[in-house]
Image (cartoon, rainbow, N blue to C red; front, side, top):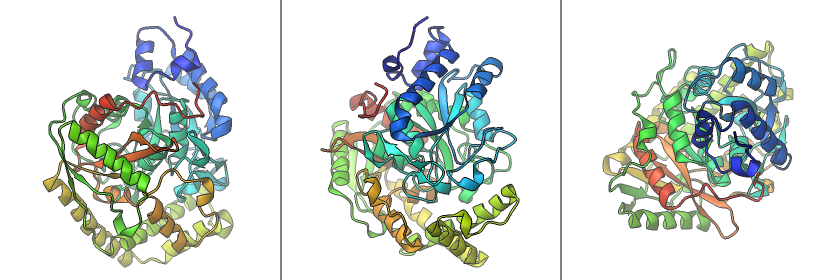
Length: 476
């Protein structure tokens, strides 16, 4: 039996920790002790973990720990949609602080079946309606590479926790970039699966399947194995993708000679920072050294695509809040929200059903433009973000709804188009800039082509490994 120190714990990914448990070198309780110690060591500087429930985690280990691929590995849930029965899902929103779901979401049930020991929740922006991770309920989450900078949105708490070594892998979800954006700024690996690949938490087809669930991790193999553990159709979910293969078996397989489209032109006209362009240029050189073919290619999107997305999302926000009224048992008012969020919800309530359907029709045109890319190319490469990790002060504290969305396009314009068309897309931590900050690059592939992305990512990880890079705020 080994006494696992924090510095040693940090060296293992989730698959490696599971192997230690399988061989009897450590116990699940000992790993939980270590993860709680890691939380205590760095969370004061990061504000990444907003709740822990050690007693429930101990009960799970004693009574329900199965024999899945991550048996006994500590794990965190993003505090947004992934309901854990008996524990609050607060969403960074004061009115939800004491709301405790009666049962687990299907996604959480599958996480548990994998053997993951869930012991806490990670920070989110208030109702995931902000472009950085901050809320009235929990304050601001800091980036472990530079605590004066954002940890991204909206899985920022998860990204900071994984990058700093609290856990090797944790839950995130992505409706417009919320796995890939924080992965980029915190130096994690983050893959958004195909629409319908696994359960949406808590259930159904949130945002018409644009919102998808998965994890952020330090290793590619952990992401692949967890997707194997959670993939599969869900009764009552409109969008269920074709049955997947063995994603874990894709790790280390030769991806072949890929034809890759390359673009640094941001959709809808935002300027792209030189550091983000340089990250793509460096990645192209690496890809060509590996034998892949890279060609410039910009996706030509319908001019009204962004306004359609905005209309659609505003209506979805308003819908979400109408459903929240049922959960809370009361009407919501301006007093429940920061002014800008209330402006968004009121704007959504003014949109007619016909306007939503027209916007959805235009989003189908966006999807067609994006998906047609993969008739010519195996993958599409771009920056994950239009800018390097921004200082906290760059995010407006109070702005109009219009200013809010203009900032979105200046910050994260590259990601949402793959939510619209349903493709898998990943942010890969290959490049750090001169300031020592991670600059992620994004790869996307055709719908249901996660296997190709995992093969490519594992090839890149092998030749340009990132897992041993340590941010200044880290457990070791």
